[in-house]
Length: 255
Image (cartoon, rainbow, N blue to C red):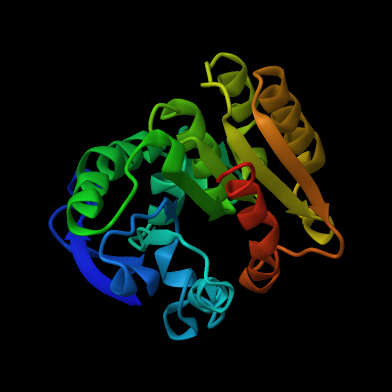
């Protein structure tokens, strides 16, 4: 079951409601006592339905979870579509300047503060969640992948595991790895991170930024599953194919 409802992200876009997609396993109806881990995801419009996706292709996350009977809730929030560069601003922890985009103000911390302080309490009150850190995870791709790395780093007391697909670490001029090296992670923090082999040449320095980020995570004791996806591209169709890989990582070593 997937529910859709609106809630404003007031610190960034004011009172206009933003769509929240919530996947609840069928088991919740069959067993009222059941409680589930929660995976928060970025770019909610791309997660479940092709008709809502930016380019007409979603991840098909609901079908995957249903077919494999995965005991997991997914909460996916629509991105900021406001011009100019609303999504880039909301999904960057850092202010940056790029030849194509110009100067973009990083509002990633404001968004994460809202998610943790406003949205998560609503979800935990309304749905059958396991609300503790060990069962609260986060995932995203591209800028959402960057934000997933930021969330599991800066909000490690909230999120114990993260999946960062094609994270845009190259766009923030190598600032993610230094932040990771200056951070403390609770024991057992798990991160899945990948890049597609075909996207490596899209921007200068992508491979080096990826390697620096991976090394920084391992230096801090994070349990990292790092992959270069053969013939992988920077698109929803490719990220959908990686769902089994990052799901196994998120659920690894769990009863």
